[in-house]
Length: 449
Ligand code: PLZ
Image (cartoon, rainbow, N blue to C red; front, side):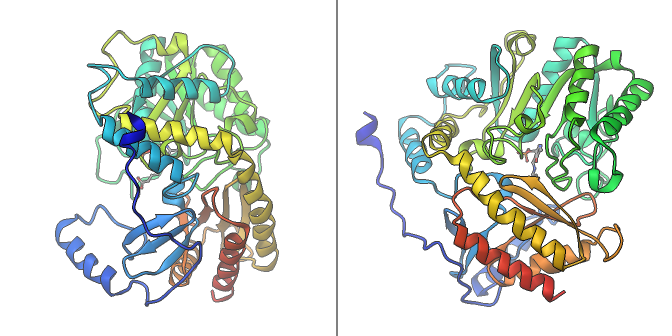
């Protein structure tokens, strides 16, 4: 049945090249922007002024025909590339089979298969179970629910500079007030923010940073009140902060000794982004629970909470779910993404990207003293910009560079508590040549500062 139902996907090829044919934003984008302002609230802002019409691989095309090298990949979602053929085929086929029934009413295989794949590819060699949701924030919310039910405790610990979402509980867990929290309270209670490891800013070893975090959790919070500690193995919105070696293992050990569920939010760092399926593997941790979203389904909304079976089974039947959670079309896309990563050896592509981008960024750092730090792993790299000769954050330089890049056909994302980080999240489909071309544009932008 599937064969006859696969629709022919009718689309124009997109050359993998940068091409700017109008001023940015072009006339069609400007007209859409006018319509948008009339009906979309100011709270929903966009970093760039151009509207997207099509995308493929590492290139996005705007409504005026401008082609941009995409170094953001929809904030790390389009990991295997825009409109990947296998993902388009799998999702299209499922679209024609059935699009929705609700797993909590009548189950279907796709949900089960995604859970099997997550059990196989998340760290840890023990029985695991997965609940599927629609978004990263929803995965975080459910992980906290499950940890509370399992431990019978209420406290939730997070780290400074963390980002976990925009829902009420996850706003409370997110570090940065502006723009994520200011005026949106009151927030959920029992959420504790502990100091993190931020080698560029605190200069602490992993052991010393962990001792500081643990002292805070022990003395200010009290371990026996804590249900869980949620960490990002590499902090995403916080500025691609890679904790010092040994920091996360020490936290994990403390959690284990104190009966605290250790949760890795791998929503941004997971799914092949760093050259492993999950970044936890680089840090030598085996979390009790791993959260995935973003990159797992090639742009279709699905998220997973995957954890030790005994923790995940703590909830009573009916305690977890949601109307669209684990949607069959998104599940089909996720299965295709896993298949492509495996069959095309895409983990190595993240390493290829690091081998080009990391030395290039370090080369820029040697030439421009506005670059204070270069860090990250695989296809998750960043540079933190400072006022030259100091470690003072320099968000103005980030704004100037991202604006220059957009005018010249390179889509860049910022990050960081002070907005002073440029992060690179290219899709694994980007070619060496496109990557080098983008670096040249960034070099010009730095020179133009
Ligand atoms: N945890 C680590 O990176 C999403 C936010 C984009 P959702 N980060 C991008 C924006 O402006 O809202 C994220 C993350 C980490 C949780 C989330 C939340 O995932 O799918 O956006 O809910």
